[in-house]
Image (cartoon, rainbow over all chains, first blue to last red):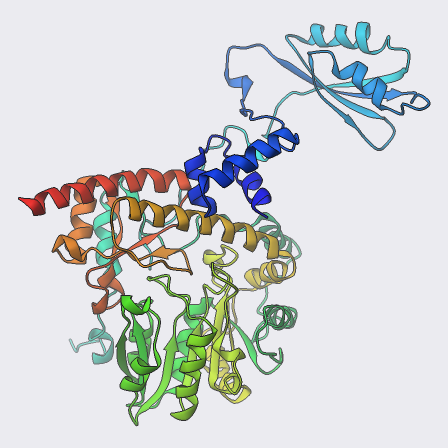
Length: 161
Length: 391
């Protein structure tokens, strides 16, 4: 119960410190610290990241979703080929998916050419890969439950009974 | 020219909140902790149903008592929440917010001179609505030492032969007080013995942070004496949709419906369709919002402890009601100075009855970030006042 409460809260506010978490969740700092440490150890918590809209920076970044069809290997299923793909640092996510394709690979590169070359040279040439479909992301509207670039203003009347 | 106004209406005081609102509105950069409505948007799936009903052209009146489908969902909801069982055809009506329900319940029950017991501090409309219905408001001052709950003795002390109705506003705005089962049982006993009726305003029922809310109507022998009022504003963040409901014994509801029929016709149709969706698929949203309010409540209580500000711990609604008597000024002075010096607006406790003197209402229908900023200012202000007092 406490675990889910902690996780639900920090999923959206990972910068909250122990003291604040203890107050907000109605417990003490030791309990929170222990739970966090335990969940990190169990890899329930896999990291504390920051959600960035790179489009608003000078950094050049191109993101693509690549559907990959592969031949699963006996005894290994999809795991081995997935691992082969996720080892590349430019790959940010790999999911096993249902539907006509098997893997969804999310890739970040500096340019369209960068990403295209990765697909042509590295991905498509893997033995088990039988097909790919590359989709470049043109605009990110919402990510991790957050609408990009939206600042909500309070439109309520300032004092109401 | 003749005086166009009735004496009855001119003798009613404008809401104390109104005056303060005008002051705050003049200060565009003020931070407000004075809002009595959720900061969340209505959950999208609920709004979507409202939009869909418009697209389908459902822009006509509904029957006076409300959409049958909605009344059935209300009955299901109340049953699911451990309430008494209500017949959607004869015991439930849909109103324009809980506010309309309060008004028509009083109008349906009062004859001139009938006394209505109104515990205070409480929401601003019970008293004027009683007066407008020719009833006589009799105030009961709730005490901080009782956590602003209504006690059996307080009730007994206020009952006279003319007493007809008890207004029970819990979870309470502005104090955040709740009444738990045992509290209600001792009240119910007096109500039955003295042959009273209860208008139970349970608009904040879903926002209870210590166990589930209990309605007095669910206690033995109380359903036939209770007008249960609830709505969608607070639980589903639907204030602007203006939708509430009343559940009452058929003979009372029938008369309330008559007023509603002539004065209002029916509650907004779009809102009613959206409300069906809220009751069918909104439990998770309510839970999410309740959790968030509860976290803020804990945060506020801790901040008050840290700055040494006396405040009983409230377990309902989204208000805290800290005591400011140590500063030797009135609630209004405190609120005005706080606004002038720190540009933070809180509502003086006196806006909710004279016995709110010495308290301020702080709403936590704001994000944690906003609350943090405002609390830092409150802490600085309180510190400064204490320094002044020392001199």
